[in-house]
Length: 539
Image: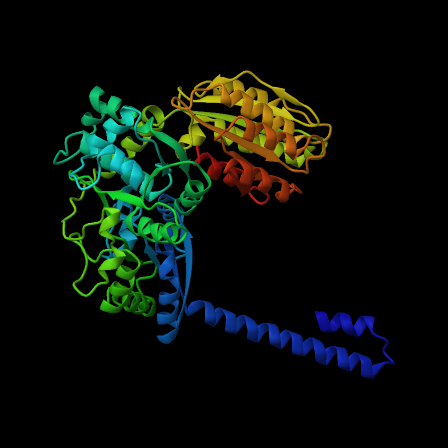
């Protein structure tokens, strides 16, 4: 067809030009066909892994091994609970899954396609407390139980930050460990046990100690670095490497606490995703990778990074200085692993956390209704907010508000308007407000943010986690960052502003606000609903 058009378009008397163009087009077509075949062949030789972010520091070793074996590896990293959702929706994009804990493989809806799962390394989730605080609490060189941590929180002596229970492995397993321990470490945790009033009150008191929640385990460290905190729950390996950095900067290390009555221990299994029973070559690649990860060479490398080779500790030839006893680490003691409940009870427990146990949140949504939002922008915003605020849709992704949460809406253009704060079970009236919004005017991010902070500052930090979610599609051309900065620092606030970019929004301005408030900027330019979903895991 292309050659026909060349014949029609070219001057029939200019045979040289016509011949030259025809030859060039033929070369291009041949090149495209060859490239397509080459890329298709190359793609078939790629082994695709979906992996927990906790495995990221093994990537270079894995890719080098695969290259030496004659194939390549692509690795996509997600939070563990995100991996479950992705594989439940469509597992065909991946050949293997490397996840933090075997329990998540058992919780897959299509678990029948997951085969040949084997544990790779051990990494418990523990409490890290700045050592001076640990000494003050009497936690050093002493057997500590989960109920001791609860009492420290209950007495107001301990506050901490943690990762999201509904999105991350460390958050979920920390919660399940306390749930199991405070229930008396039963042989099997049942649905009936979840209704125990004493247990529920204990867990409510425990979560009152939460100062900040991160939807990303890596970002939890940034929150800690940029804030005024002295304790967090995280992986042992993460805290070991974090302590190395703190000590190198002359900062106080964190003291690691291992409750004697049980900790959540991760076994980091890698499993094959059997999408094609006849693809023996893919299975061979997986077997080679799995054997390599379980080899003495890789176990030694992982132990050098702070992982354990077994529940009791480390190999004899491991560098003992990695597991510094001054940081509360004792690799000679056998760690007691918690007993994870069934898939059904685990799901009920997560919903119980959302609805009744977690510290209530007060979220102020600051919504841009300036003139640039006209048309598709406003429609997309309304759609995303309807998704987040509708109980039925939000609960499918464990994002729903509870009846103890509070929601405030501020709309802004060159000025702002505050709507009455509603409880989390009154989202229908909030949705009605959203659906009636119209646009017009300039953009005033800074004064709007100050108003949001003033509203939240009136709440008791012991009773609410407080968050501003700022959505804008443009650059603030009214107000000044200086006013926001002055207000924030003068009042010594610790309230994050999470911004969602949209349209042509100024990322520089939003990152400046994030830096000031220990917040974060989320990309909503391609999928606003997805950005709202992500930011909800931070509060």
